[in-house]
Length: 519
Image 1 (cartoon, rainbow, N blue to C red):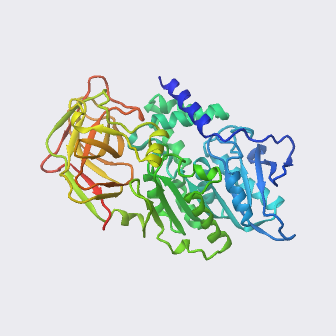
Image 2 (cartoon, rainbow, N blue to C red):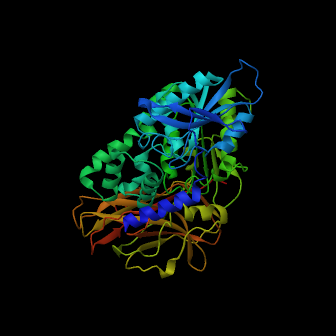
């Protein structure tokens, strides 16, 4: 079943997002009539990286230009950024985009943002400074997804990088696909399968992915160590010491790199920084810009580079650095920092005792990776359930009072409860719904949680942060928390016949804490 899912989602990714095959580059350097140069760059250990270069037209000889390096996204060909590279070159940048090692025509094996990938980024900068009119004092990096992660890691290891635009990327790989100690099945399967279809996974990646998807808990610490090495947050001190200006952009519904880990990383940065969250799923917020269409994310990325590589007084550094766009309304809201988003909290109680048999999907779920939240982005159609019809044998359900005024949820919803299981291991998934007068619930946010090594029947406390979001609950509606044990997005660890009990002891009441925008 998991193998089938890998192939299905991988095929969908490649068919739906690949922009075409990378242009052939048989010689070390070729050029086409549009001024794009296709080049071979020798990366770490002699591995050849296929790349393309765009430079400002008609520049005076000897003029130096700021440089932007764009590593490609996971499974994407080297022409991924050509539309944006053209915009940047037309405005005065030298732009080098290259296929990350192990993918498409580049050599080597997929290292998953390992040390060789970081070294490749520096080799590409070296090449650009030696073979183009790039200015060594004005170097930036950016990209989407994989390119974003590599750019952040490069900013930690190469002090020449002065500005980064990391879009739909990760700061913490463990918190991204193993949050709540739960394997994000569809995300990991999609990445693994797409890598196998478009590149050459290395033995280390194959081993880690196999252990991850097979729930090999004996290798858990090894997997976590592997992920930490590839997480920019692990190298935070070096990023801060180097002082690059960091712009982070992500989607509320990113099912591969959820927003919480980006927000936490942002708060720890000490240099110039900006955080943007918008509706959508993984890389869907940037997608139209890759086709050369108007796109807020890419517009702000160019403004960011202009400010910190050209010194342009364009005002981006005077704007509120945290910019949020609600899934329910147009326009952006500015905040001075991430903690200000959570300044106003409202709780509702999870009273009483409820029990749920495991291994059965109650009907509450987070949807399908890439598809569900993209539909929410463009059509505002989140997953829905009939809350009154949810089977109480397989789900716990609690509801707030009906609200007289709109409730503008902003940031990270937190759940605190007490759980007991008939088994030592288990998984639960918590969902927050906006429930209308007819009982139809629209998904606001959710998150999984897995436990191991618990004493059967012994209650224990659970604190769970749901995935950050911005959603407006209309007046006359209420919020509902639903907890069940199965979601197709995740691997669950409930033994057959397990039952979970949710309680609210008087000495430690259970609750949901909802961050609300101050009016």
